[in-house]
Structures are given as structure tokens and as C-alpha cells.
Length: 318
Length: 299
Image (cartoon, rainbow over all chains, first blue to last red; front, side, top):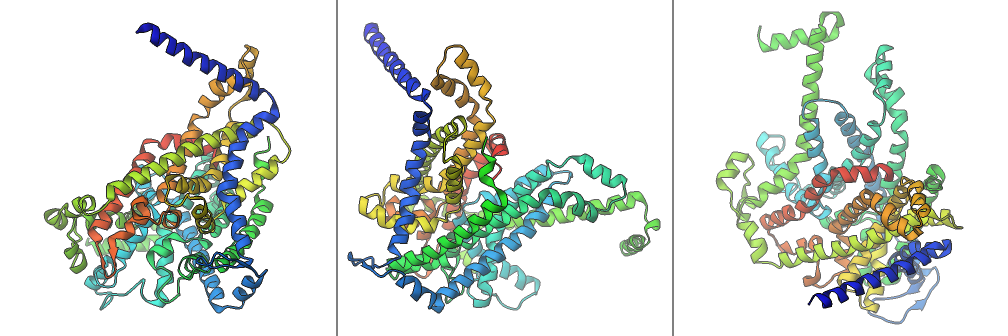
């Protein structure tokens, strides 16, 4: 018995030693080390991101239906018909309204909440925990909660508003064309404002108290303190957040699809929703590729601003 | 003095600063602070409260006249929706799918990002800056931009409706930030500790395994949580890459609680609570590691 176990263990030990010496040898050379460590990352990103993106761009140059295996090369034909279609520009506009509206609202709410939570008062820890909850709730759940709460007949917002007497009958927040987009922006911001709160809060806590003490000694009021101390310290974070959030909100798909599906009519149909429609309901793959192409151009533009403004690539050069 | 008089005195005190005492002013500030805090908590917490409330009421009640005061609900509460989520549907299977996919994504992402972070900090090579830019650029990719072409490719190579297919999609979303975070994290691990191992005759692999890796632990935990959040949250990729109902993860599966003309709100909210529990637990248990890990990440 024990001999078997000993043999087994020595076998395991031998294998481990051998593989360790092999790995030791491989890790010694710089070039090999890079290949072994960075290689898997490059391989994974190529399979999961680079190839699909190139594929979509290649697709955008073709007349391609999902049910028809033959693709016809048409160059920029898809793009040309895209730019000529009012549907595209409506979706483009909806994306901008949703993106700008969301980021604007989130910035105000997120900033005010952060300034509030950075103060010291009894229960601040509990308050912080409660305020952070929405960020942890999955998007699909957020969408469903608000669809329930904003329902025309039995949504709690309408019930309370009618009980109190603000309105006579329920409002279809998500069914009324003029209200759908603002409602969507509000419920989307409920979850994502917290992201800005967290980022700003982290930055605020690194401002030394002595700055504020000195300002108080010199007779500065709260507004002045904000303008001269707080704002310059958080400006960088705010800019970064506006840019990155702007890109993400412009490209947001899930919450819109879950809550309104692009409706009523096409009032909340943003570009990502349009891609989904065109690809999986109209089965026009080439066209979906072309819309993706324009989103990609937008991303590229944002990336140029990002790299020029923040030099993130230099941050890791050490 | 009546309450109204007192308020009037106070208001006049506000207008003329010498008429209001220091104590009074402090108290007023305190009260207004708590009012603002109260409103904030209400705004952020009420929808969560409503999710719990709806999950405890029968569907009939919800779509006729939902109760909203806590004491009313406690007397009329029913766990019917909670039970039905499990008996009427494939819920446990979906839950398992979600956990499995998140598990695969976490293991692969953490391993890959940790290795890459180490290599990138310890070796200077040409194209490193380019690599940083590409990584950050792909960090900005929206899911729909990847999911739509992935559907075409996955269909051709047989990855559609598979755990690996969806996991690779989640890895694509989580990996860029994870590599970046580990890259920055390894910069805080002093090379001197590794040099000490080499002085004692250890190889580079030994110093990586016995010194650098254990020190990178908080970063790895942070990356794992981030990846979990990405995978657990994902609706877009799962909707597109897992068309088969049995293979679905929780976010798209929730959609099956609505039928043509009817929504099972009670069950949907019960399921929603169940989906929200893991992220809560994780973040509360591991708050310290997250802060530690992201202190250097700062993105």
C-alpha cells in the first residue's frame, strides 16, 4: 500500500520538478517570457475581439443576408444607402440624446451624492452602503423594476401620484412617445450615477483636510471652497468619466432593449438597437455591419481624444 | 411659542446673521443635511424596496392595487412567487448556467491577466506602448459591436449555445480592464524582493511563483470580482450567443417571465432578488480587497 503511494508521490514530485525546471529555463529569456506571459492575452483578444471586429467591417462591404450564403461585394454601397436613410439619422440622433442626457444627469446626481457622502455625519457608512446598492443590481433587473414602477395602470409612481392628487389618471411613462426617452434616461441614471459617485468619492478622500482648514481660517465660504479646492482636484476624474461614460452610454444596448425595445414607434431606437434589429430581425447582415462600422468610427474618434487628453499609455511606462 | 413662530424667528435670523446664534445655525445645518440624506436614501433605495415588496405579493394584487406600506405587506405576504420561480421554470438550471459561465470567465481572465501583467512590467519590449493603447481601445468596445459578428463566427465554428462560446465573449469584455489593472498592480510589487530570490539561487520562475504571485493576490481578487460582475450582468452577449432556452444565463432567461399579453411580475421580481444576491454578498465580503486592488487600478 504505502509503496504504491510513495511511488505515486515521487512520480508527482518528479513531474513537478521537471516542469518547474522547464518553466525556469523558459522564463529566463526575455523574449520567451514575453511570449509565455503576454501571448495568451494576445491570443484571446484576437479570437474574441479583433477577428469579430474585422469580420463585421468586412461584412459591411457586402450585400449579405443571413439566409443567403452568397455574399456580393458592393464596396461602400451599404454606407451610402445608410447615410441616405432617415431611419439611420433618427437612430443616430436618439443615440446622442440618450448618451448626452444620461451622462449629464449622471454627472449632476453622481457629483452631488459624492459631495454629500464625503461629509461626516452619523450613519454615513450605512448611507454609503445603501446608495451603492443600485450599482450592484444587474441591468436586466433594473429594467424590470422600472417597467413595473412606471406602468400606466399599476405602477407605484402613478398610484402614489394619483392618491396624492398630483395627477388624475396614470401616465404611460414608457408608452408615451414624448416621455419614453426622458424616462429611459432617468431609470438608466439610477444605476449608473453611482459609478460617478464612487470615482469622485475616491478622489475626494485623497484631498487633505488641511486644505479646507486653511480655507476656513481665511474666511472662505462653502462655494468658494468648492471652486478653489474641490473642483480643481476632481476635474481630471470628471473629464475622464464624461468621456468614457459618454462612449458607453452612446453605445448602450441592454437597458434600452429590455425596457422599451426601441419603442414606442422608433422613438428610443438608438444605433445599437438598430444593429440588433437589422441583423436579427431584418437579417440584413451587410447593413448591420455598416452601422457597426460607423459606431467603430465614433469609438476611434473618442479614443483619439482619450489618448491625446489623458495619455493613459504613458501611465504604465515604467 | 408655536412651531410657526419659532420657524419665523429662525427665518428672520437667517436674514440677519447677528440675530442667529452659533448653536442655532449649526442645528439648522444639521437638520438640512439629514433631510438631504433622507431624500437621497429614499431615491436610491425605494426601487429595491419595491422589488422585494412585489416579489411577496400575488400577481393579482400587483396588477390591481399593490400594497405599499410595510405593515400591510407583512400581513398579506406570500411566498408563492418564490416557490413558483423554481417549480414552474428552469430557474435552477439557468442559475447554474450563469454560475458556470462566470466561473470559466473568472478563471481564464484572472490567469491570463495576471500572466500578462507580470510579463509587461518585468520585460521592456518594443511595441509595449502600442499594446497599452490597443488594450485600452478594446476596453471601450460595446458588447453589441462584438456580439453581432461573434454570432456569425460562433455559428460557423460551433460555439453557439455552448458555455465556452459565451465565456469567450465575456472574457473579451473583461480582459482589457483586467490586464490593465494587473499591469498597474505588478508595478507596485517591488522587483527587489524578486532579486533577493535570484541572489539565493532561485530562477525567475521561482521568484514569480513564490514572491510576485502571492503579492499580487489583492489585484487578482479585484479582477475576479470585476469579471464576475461583467459575466453575471451580461444581457447582450447571452441574448445573441445563447438562443437555446436551456442554455441561457439568467439575464436573458428573465425575459421568459413575460408572455404575449401577460407578465408574471411577482415571479419576475422574486427571480430578480435572487439574481441580485450574489453580487451583494461578494462585494460586502470582499470590500477590502476590492479597494486594495482598485487603489492602483484607478480606471
